[in-house]
Image (cartoon, rainbow, N blue to C red):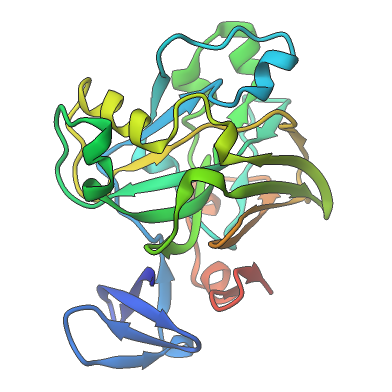
Length: 266
């Protein structure tokens, strides 16, 4: 089942996507997609991301972590499919990092990996955008990954999928840059969730980014980046230069350019 968040006449709600229609969850109300504003598919209290979580990284000279390497991204970094990724003035080297994201369904604290599936709502595509020059210069994840718009997710949440061996691809301006299988994860989804839950309580709607495979690279203003996860769809975003803080916000025009049926921007 594909689940998204929408707004109708200023009222937000969660709905099941049925082609060009949306059924409001918990009701029998059905809307046409064209009469709705598409919102971010999740409203996390926190975004937890994993680093160096593909075995392929070892082939590129990295030492794989003995336990999950996790860090936090603020909810303010969240943006939607079809919206622009603002290129911050503080950086000269902004990277794309395509990933599989997990959405938490209910509160999870100190659970075991064997229990993890009971706490998962579903999965979506994500892009862990990074100001790579800041990260390399300052070793500061808190700054490098936290700018507004640096966590695109979507285009929806897919609830019926096995995450153990999905193909994930990232394309920059149509050119394939990342290609991997989630079976290559050092810490698969259940282990990752269990580990995080022993560090911090996970709340409904929280988002876990499972790590990016090798091949991440720089983007420029005007570029288009597309993250595709098998069985879910494609997350597409352009890179833009914000002139002032107002330009960072997601506008109705940006929302209107999203075709949520196909997962591509118009």
